[in-house]
Image 1 (tube, one colour):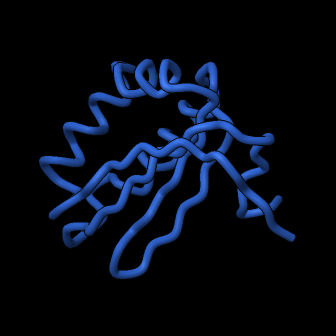
Image 2: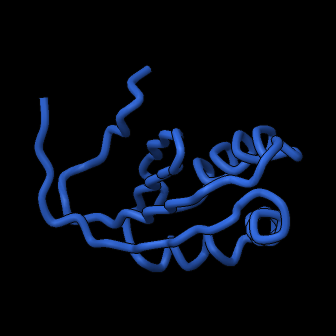
Length: 105
């Protein structure tokens, strides 16, 4: 399985979540797996890519803005967001972008 999400032809949307973690796991790894599992079942979800060193970057891809809105409002996702603010992240930023062009090998 590729680590690069197999996205469709543009346009589509990217939610870019950039973060710095706090010390310790505190249940983070388990919740991260659960969130990908849950997101993948949401209407409009196209894929996800993630990398972590000093800064973590997770990019999820969505067919439209309405799908992103519904994902943000998901109750289990909201619980993970709350835990992130309280336990897992010292800082984070969310950016939403429209992908108008993509290419690759």
